[in-house]
Length: 301
Length: 127
Image (tube, rainbow over all chains, first blue to last red; front, side, top):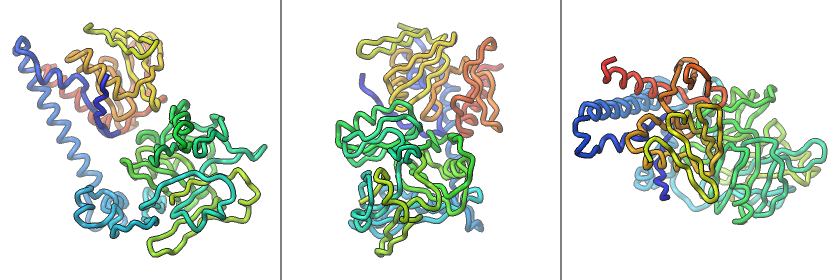
């Protein structure tokens, strides 16, 4: 059966049999009134869509701290606009060199830094990142490490080679043919696909599943990091203050993130971002990392 | 075959009378089909593919089924309670509760539109 692949967002609904009703056969002409109200209903839903979109995303003057407006202005340009202006989604001129754009914003009193890799393809890396530190444009620690034996926690595939098979967390990230997929599932066929196509796969706490907040057991507060997919745009969100899982995930939901999983958090988890002018911002501490041979990183290069 | 949804792939076939089909929930590349009497079956199709099957097999009878965002298809005959403020959707036949939002919460925007849709159907039927 051919899959029609009709897109739908998480704030949309679709009446499945509507196409059949709106194009009735001649014998169904007597059902005109039913078709009429359906047409009205579709109009109503479309108008409601537009209204909601305007309510949530219309830039509000006099609200410089309005985070949705800031994010929309910087990330919400159409491809046509981008092409015409010669600027990327972050509003800066296009270049071929890998680098990282950064946006600082505030969502529900949660201060976030959003790191968007540009001209870069992500890979996973395991071990001491010394060899990569001057290559990657953006890097964060990916999978957690087991406390008991220091092995990688959860299923993990490195360039087609499975290194771990456990299911401890339902969130996953798959990188196959350079395409990043962030999702939540106990059984993802992308694990097998990653092994077949020299891809990458790791698991982490799920934070946002199709626009819905996912609750997690740990209740402590610390610096949080997340790999996010917002309408196909992949970026990393980092909390600038100590936050609970719940508050951090809620901020991502309110940001409009479709899917997000956790990245190794705390103030010590290591990583870096190279800005357009070549300046390097590092995160956390690298004091401990050489002691963990199974420490993993997602690196855009 | 009106009134019966057939989901067939490889060596498996699932056949569900639509009057007993309560909701279908996405799980990555799979779906869980939930029926009125507590049966749940996982099928190896994406939710969009199931949506296409409903449209192709049921035609206008598929109008009872609504896609709610990316994660859910519900049979509106079983929509029992919507609370937009609490972001709550309950699916029930008034005997058994099939879905109370604990398993998967629909977004607030989706609930607003679902309620508007059901309100509109009532108004247009003169109820």
